[in-house]
Image (cartoon, rainbow, N blue to C red; front, side):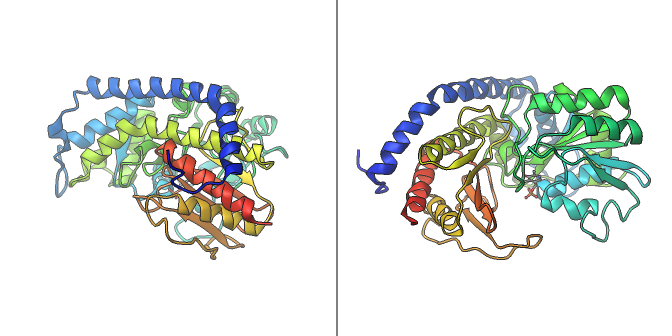
Length: 418
Ligand SMILES: *Cc1c(COP(=O)(O)O)cnc(C)c1O
């Protein structure tokens, strides 16, 4: 075989060593993938998916069987009573916004138990002031800070829930740009087990972005009432061109449908045009794409550990999402890493990512993304704010074979920096 990407001897031998370290962990990832993929197949058969369902609808989209059946497929694989799985959601943030505004009413209290939520959710809630936010509409908001090691303060949650009996407890599974571990189902279960007996009417809502299909169980089965995520992350398999999903208790999903379209019409509305075949193919491929992304993350952790860097989580740890954080220590190395990932991408491999200001950040941010779908982060991508500790957030990789090359090129670029 030719050394197609001109990777030097040092990185190639470190990569071989990393692969050796990963082997047993890859087997576990394959086992989870196999179950989730077979569950997806079962869902397709259970609801008699047929080629005619891909035709799509126009106008109001009444009686769109393809659209309505896709909702059922996602409900099935997430063990949920009901789901909305639709291209009408513009992004993960929009999907979460529909769920929050669908459920919460003026005077209700929302309690975040995983500290301050992801950057783009802050104006939605009104943590950063914004006209039209939940707070603007009279929803009260409070949060329980994470402990100093980044884990959930279960004692604090117990106290806050007992005292406030909030309408909603909000959990964010993935770390976002925070330095904290992402949550697995067992940690989500620990929160639900505290909240439910103390306040049975509280709705437990999960931001499940990046968490779908990473484990055998669905968060719904451990006590979550409602969850939401993006179709251009795990849930759309790298094929869905846009969209999001909300899944959970049927009464809550109905409220969300009223917010997505209008009170009264709810889920009956929304034409699908020509997107359904890709939405179905994406659903079908999602457990596979997620497994490839987790393998990429585990490999990256092993490789950068071999090269002497701090990684979170390490390659031995089980994962509840696809994010890998590598602490590079200097702005030069952070930029080098992103250059390497970009140069290993199928699209725009020839461009050089540059740090630039981003709304909501006090430091510049650098991003590498060479994806078929604009902004898709189930495809391999890397980003990080140019501030201490100069950590890069790596995610995605719908094909491990090519994502591995991207990660090796990133390592080679980083090692070139003195
Ligand atoms: C990606 C993400 C979102 C949604 O982001 P979009 O870019 O709007 O899709 C929300 N929460 C977390 C934790 C995320 O990682």
